[in-house]
Image 1 (tube, helix red, strand yellow):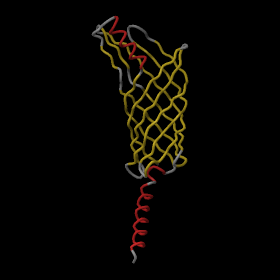
Image 2 (cartoon, helix red, strand yellow):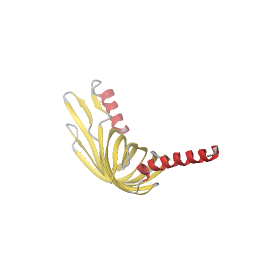
Image 3 (cartoon, helix red, strand yellow):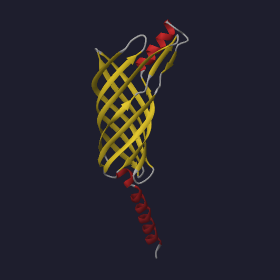
Length: 196
């Protein structure tokens, strides 16, 4: 057997190994999963800073509460998926003088997800969609709620850890408009996805 033939044979074996791993991310079908991460609101951070500056320098704030996202969808091909789910920000809090004011939001969302494979086991992600949100605040200063629908978008990556499972890392921005004012909540998360 010539050196050229051996080289071609080795190349074919390597290619076969790569394509064998590829279905972990390229597989068509349904999927579901969940993510945990940290929610952030620049508007809430500004409010917390104002409370400390003008009312109580010893006030404490929860600026990055633990958020939860549950999602499911259908991947049409290696480049596109449709997805829906539920996201809860967790509780933003300002505590002063033994009293605590809380604010939180939940949302139901639908989105189109674009995927760009960069290796057999890694894909970059981008998404944009519509969210239906509900926000509320409770405590000694105010008790109120509001709801609406706005756009959201995000970027991230998927890392296959098996034929039907992957780890997700995402950064999403949820926008909301209420009473003529707008505010954003960002969500940096890591999660697990399983195909079925």
